[in-house]
Image (cartoon, rainbow over all chains, first blue to last red):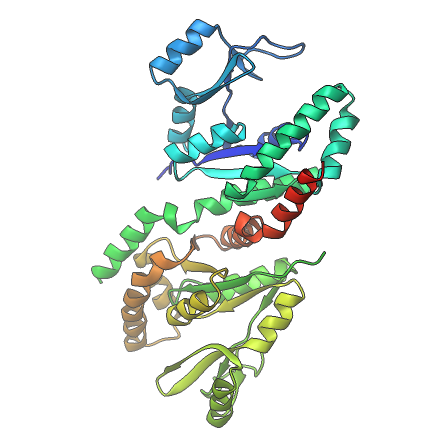
Length: 206
Length: 206
């Protein structure tokens, strides 16, 4: 019996290493599918349509909103970002655990809509380390770094509402930890109603 | 910083393979300590004091009850069984995850006393398989097997109150699953208050 996959939401501070973490997880295990968000912003250098995002026009995005084709969406800096539902549904049905890498407001919308979703917050071991990573990237100017840190304050306030806090100190450790969390969730008794019901019926028939 | 270990309760149907599971888990990973229960019943052939149980006199057991030296105890067929607290406390302090292999009533007492304990129920994939394993052992007569199955009915009724249901189909899979569950629990946000507090203070100081 193929069991339905789990919906997993991964959020975390910008600079926590979510992208690398997801990449390694998908390379090492084959039971995951990564949801690709849709956005109306323009692709940056190196971004590929359908890989980083589905890049679509504003009118198309608004049509998706109206037809209920998105599980959550938000507007930042005049651009829309959202999670198309079709891919998520197909993969869950196929038994894959589907990962949404989305920010904290989107995560909270998903949890309201799917109380069984698992919410994981990724953080470096300290905020000093977060600063080091943001500066170390060398790709952002000081204003951008300050903006990210200020956003980290808002995100940090919502950290406690996540189901798990994943400390990304050493990448390989963090990947194994992430896999363990999702694997363990499959054995959670709130996901085992069918099995418990079956065993109880079999015991009654003894 | 050494963090305190987790208290893990493992129960399950007689014949579910808990003993073999615990043995393999302890052989494969070194972060676990198995609590040894105290009992007033006589040792059976092959049982070693301090390994299967601490075999003690009734008077000594009752003294332990009176002095609060047990985390839980119960009386079955005129014999006492209980969990001495000292070993559990020492190992938890030392950062070990301590496993109590106890029956369902004891498990529920532990959960009341330690709401943070993780309760795991071990079951074969079906009750038919449970019967096959009990009969296959060849060590018990029919009356004993029937008694165990009748007890399974009582135990099954409490299964849903456990945090996790662990299906022991293939041993190596089940050991990895058990390890994943306990590992994941360490990242549960309800066990990460200290880290969340520290990160929030560091963010405030930015």
